[in-house]
Amino acid sequence: MSLLVRKLAPSELDWANSKYKEIDFLPSPDSDFVAVAEIHGIAAGLGRVTKVAPGVGELGGMYVFPEHRGTGISKSLIQFLIAESALEILYCLPFEHLYSLYESAGFRVCQPGTLVPPRVLDKQTWCNAHYSKSVLLMCRASGSNVI
Ligand SMILES: CC(C)(COP(=O)(O)OP(=O)(O)OC[C@H]1O[C@@H](n2cnc3c(N)ncnc32)[C@H](O)[C@@H]1OP(=O)(O)O)[C@@H](O)C(=O)NCCC(=O)NCCS
Image 1 (spheres, rainbow, N blue to C red):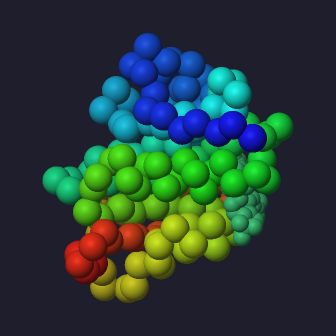
Image 2: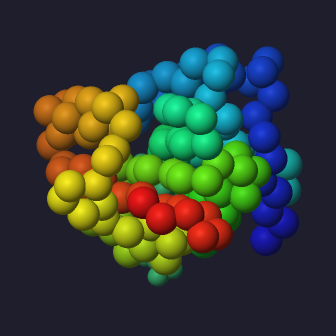
Image 3: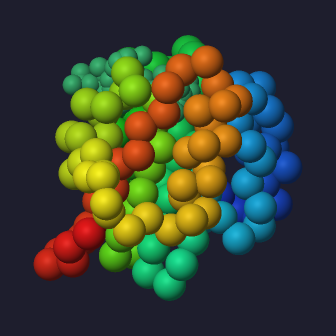
């Protein structure tokens, strides 16, 4: 399998948002760092990081198109986004059943009392009200950063 993960070009944002609409995910603004996975040059999945504060982002928007699932594409997208967004602290709001996927990339469930940017907390509240599946709050710090 020839898998390439790259940064989405600005001219591709409308297309990416049309894909997100298919699964009822919020559109990305221009300011998001969006990644696209391609197999043999064919788009196979998307992911994104939204900056929420200096050095802090929310990783999400993980969408692997149905015909390409089960071959590790989401793991590659997550690794690319962690490396290329170069933010010290990342939060994510995964559906509960995907806990292990994010844990394997170094995310941990935020402990009660952890200081979390209000924007991330608001999004978690919105997701839990909007989707039928419950959404976790997880975080990941790079290097010696502690949350
Ligand atoms: C969830 C999704 C991104 C997974 O993409 P994928 O490329 O098929 O996932 P991968 O092949 O990289 O699998 C990575 C790991 O996640 C696990 N996983 C994938 N889908 C899963 C599911 N539905 N339930 C539980 N675990 C799942 C796999 O078992 C795998 O773990 P392993 O390596 O220990 O075997 C994809 O199914 C999708 O786009 N779903 C619709 C949108 C969505 O729910 N996005 C996630 C928002 S949090």
